Length: 189
Image (tube, rainbow, N blue to C red):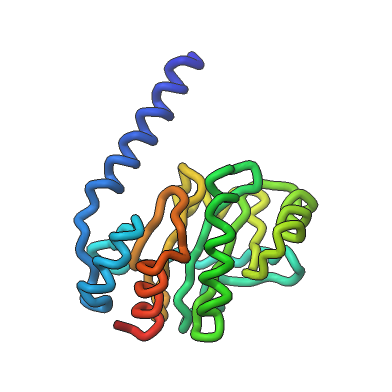
């Protein structure tokens, strides 16, 4: 039974990965072809049509709660991650650089930790000196709604609150191409 379950999970993941690879690489008219090309150059897969994200409210690591809808009007990177995930940890320094560069221009990074103890997350974030907001999805409810099957997975949401792109796996968020793409997104080009 374990063998068949493992094989079913592996097959499902491979199907999902293949689906993402073959998503047509066009982006809605809200983003220029130049920006779509820049996104593609850093492995950010643009969607054919913008999609409405599922709103949620979850606790923040530093206290209080936040909802995704609270950030409408900003370009949001909704990043699902965990401290035990080496690729998640590898991409976070570049996320911090991107965040510091563009937070005053309307970029928000919402790092959704999935299923971990608050003290584990707090220690990791404190030791790493990350300043972007960290959200706690302790019971994996929101990651389940978003269909997260691999860590990290990030959704790019435009200023109108629509999902425009998805990233499965870690990337360098601070490359010249990524910086140019986010400049364009933040300036609605």
